[in-house]
Structures are given as structure tokens and as C-alpha cells.
Amino acid sequence: MSNTTGINDGAARILIETRALTKIYDGTSGSPPAVNALNLKIPAGEFTAIMGPSGSGKSTLLYLIAGLAEPTAGEVLIDGVSISSLSDTARARMRNTRIGFVFQRFNLLGFLSARDNIEAPRLMGWKQRGSPRAIDDLLVAVGLEKKRLRKVSELSSGEQQRVAIARALINDPDILLADEPTGNLDSRNAEAVLDLLLKLKDELGLTIVMVTHNLDVALRADRIIQMKDGSVERELMTNELDSSSEWAQRPAGHIRP
Image 1 (cartoon, rainbow, N blue to C red):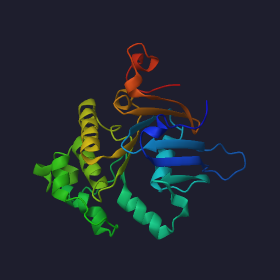
Image 2: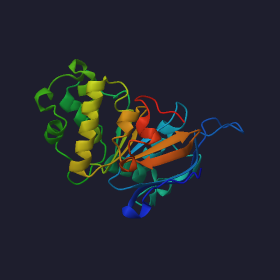
Image 3: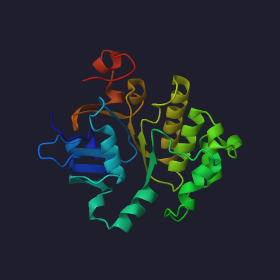
Image 4: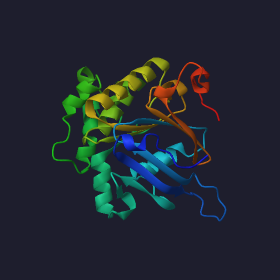
């Protein structure tokens, strides 16, 4: 299959694009790439789910898009601007104002309150847009306004993930990247977090790229991209599925080639 993706490329402006994007962690000649010359286009406002077996390059791709990892070759473009062409300062500014990242293990400070965790990016001096989103508004958006002063260590896993999502939105980004945001949650909390992401996408106009192993979760995205060996194996728009589809008939859980 071609390693170029981007269904309905002309339907909206392309917000995220990768061109021959490659990442090799081991510098030894002949080492297999984690991401292999991958070409990808994600329109503004799309919710894209990335699936694939462990080691297929899903999380590496997400970190490359976020500018949290350096590509071995190729480039990532945000709104047509190559991240690699920016100075370190400009790249940090772009990352901190346009991209929110939700980590699989939350990466919260357990001794701080929910409110202080959300504010932590500001306290650490991250650059902001002219009018960053109000913390109390974010607490309301994620349904934690009544627990804003509770220590994160006292919150449930689902509530901690909501704090992590709110923190990712503190500087009013237009891109939200999420690495297995429901992977450590039970089915009830996973459903609640997914509902929250979909609500925020509609209310804030977010473009979401989410890594997940769970097919039920992925089927609620606009598009599913399945990776294998660092490349795109196949993809589909979920609104084109019907009950006879191979994807629709698969059981919930891990998706396999």
C-alpha cells in the first residue's frame, strides 16, 4: 500500500502534514525505523485515531508531530510551516501555544491540587497566547469544578485524566495529541473521557490525533489510520462503515492486521 495518507485532502485546510517522516532510534546501519518515510495529512478539525500493534510506531509518530522528538529524516509541518525550519525558541513557542499533549500516564503532580496542576504550564514559564483559557472555565469543561482544590493523588484515575486533558488545553491550542488517553481506565471512565474529548472537539474546534489500541474507541473518531512497521498499512473514514464492514464486525479490543 502507498505510504501516503489523507482521505478527502481537499475538504479542509491541512493543519498537520508529515513528509517522508523517518525516525531511527538505533544509529547502527540497517536498524529498522520506528517511523518509516511516512507521508500523512490531517485536515483541521478532524479527529484521527492511530492504531496498530506494539512497536508499529504510533507513539513515536505522535511525539514527532508534537516536536518532542527529532526526526532522523523528513519533516513535520504545522499549518504549512516546517517545525525543523524554526529556531529552538520559535519551535518551543509553537509547541507551547498550538499543541496540547495528553500523556498516557498523566504526568501530574500528585501533591498539587487539580487547579494547580492545570496552571503548572504557566508557572513553569511556558509562553502563552494573548488570551489563554481561564483555568476555572477548563475545570467546568472537564466536570471538575467541585474538586478543583482536591489533591490529584486523591482523585480517581478518570478524574486525573480529565485534569491532564484540561492542562493540555491551558494555552488554548488548536491541536490536541493524546497517547492512549483511555488505556489506563476502566470501561466506564474510558467512555466518559472519550465523550469529553468529542465534546471539546466540537466546542473548541480542536484537531485531535489519538493513539489507541481499542477499536471501540477508534471507531468514534472521524478517521482510523492503522500502522505497521512504521508505515501506514491502511485507513478508513468511520462514517463510511456499514454493518457488513470487516472493521465493524471485529470484536472490541486490539486491532490486528
